[in-house]
Amino acid sequence: MKPKFYSLILKSMSFMSYRFMRVLIMFDLPVETKAQVRTYTRFRKELIKEGFLMLQYSIYIKSCINKEAALGSVRSVNRFLPRDGHVRSLIITERQYENMMILVGEEDRNIEILGDNRTIMF
Image (cartoon, rainbow, N blue to C red; front, side):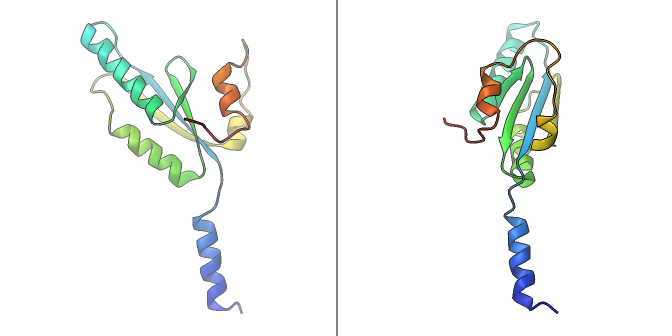
C-alpha cells in the first residue's frame, strides 16, 4: 500500500503535466462592407495579440503547454468573437499536429516558428 503523500505527489504531477497541444482557430467572416472589414481586421489582430500565428488564410494556430492552457486560449478567443460569421476551434496534440501533411506548396515562416521550437518570442 502506498503512503498517502505518494498519491498527493502523483496528483500534483498530473496537474502540472506538459503535454504540448495546438489550438487551431478557423474562421469565415463576411467582408462585404467597411464595418465588416473592420470587424475582420480587429478579430485577426486580437488573435495575433493572443499569440496565434497564421497557418494559412483564416486559420490561426497557437502552441500551448497542456490541455488546460489550450482551453484557456479558446476561452480568451471567446472574449472578442465577432457577431457575424463562423469561428471554430480545434485542440489537437503535438503528435497529431506533426502528422499533418502538406499536399501542395511549402512550409512558410510561421510554420518554422511553430515547428519544433515551442518557445515563442514576442
